[in-house]
Length: 113
Length: 122
Image 1 (tube, rainbow over the protein chains, first blue to last red):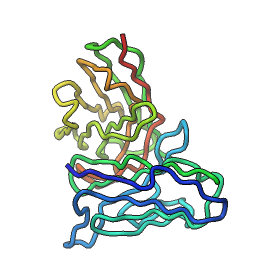
Image 2 (image 1 turned 90 degrees about the vertical axis):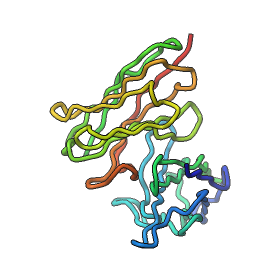
Image 3 (image 1 turned 45 degrees about the horizontal axis):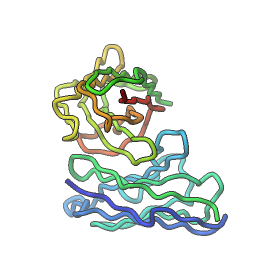
């Protein structure tokens, strides 16, 4: 099974500043044959279900603000919030779907400094 | 916009059973892979089970194999999770989640319900 890890566990960023979250998989989640990275990012606010932000490592879901961006390949991925807004306070999870069983990272909590 | 509404959660004793339901609306339910994903209180997300479009393929996380059964009724746009031999570690919010159209067994989730809480305690 693929194990996902995230760093940091939590971070506090000033409004308007950049927030960077890292996600690492225990084995590559990228297929060379189709050049796709099987990695998604979710945002979960308190009391709400997760919301899909990014899939294929860098494709933003429809309606997601462009301050959210994803990058990376192989085993190392990053979610960047370019200019943190108050409404971005949440826990962020990465998920691999390269091979079953589907697995999630433990989450990174983002707060306002 | 697609909607998923879970029901059936509650308090159950260890060793007991519970059946969860998820009612889907505003999308062609029978064309999508569906999953259950759970989240223990204050913890992260764990995929539990999924089922293909016609219900012929079902997969489970190891910790629930032999105890949980996923099923669906496409005529009623509904997804189910029968949970038997429940343990304290099954305590969680259970979410119904949809994989995108034309996806497969291992995919991301583009729509989630609000979840239903299952508490296993004596």
